Length: 292
Image 1: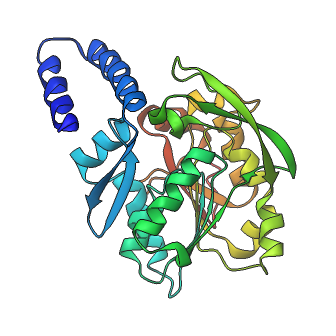
Image 2 (image 1 turned 60 degrees about the vertical axis):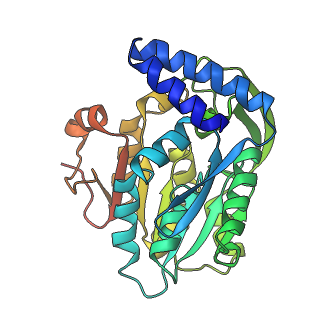
């Protein structure tokens, strides 16, 4: 009843106030309600699975409105994974499972290895896996991945609907209080060797700007398995790091990977900026590089 009243109120406000004002009011009311009511998550039934997400959050709003999360990303991964009899996916920056869950529903034989250093996100991911009875199909690791093993600061946002922006740097994408914890850093190559060098068919890497660090620590597994990569490349996130989108593209080219947009168009150095203006999700395929 409380949620229905809140959604009715939000709709009425949208009719008379500018979008920016509505957004501000939405965030303030959401946080007050989240603090007041102990039940901070809600189940959202989608096609073949259920997602528990933060009540009154932008994530829940999108899931209810679109009945999916980043459908083009899920579609690109599904097309690749369907090519393999027993597909294996790395979900790096798994968050609460918004990409892995629909893929697990679509592909009954899929196995997922998920990496999520955020404590809150990882707790909700585990909840979602239990709710869908998929705990045996997903291995969840609490470390972050980087260029070398060790430890690093992890920046977390206080707002529950901003946890998708948590990472190894404060990207300052929203004016929100941030606190830091120390997380363990592993490399993908080290995990791969300890796990018996399994074949990996695809990897989704969405780590809020540190994607190149993950790749630098994954040279051996990429050379051996040659998986398709689904990468987030965001200028806003990269501003907090000492490398750019062009550095990431150059690394992919040096390792014989071709960068494409989700429509399958090859991205070269001279077209990268224009591509970033339109989207921040890209596919990298092994084979002929995208060097002009």
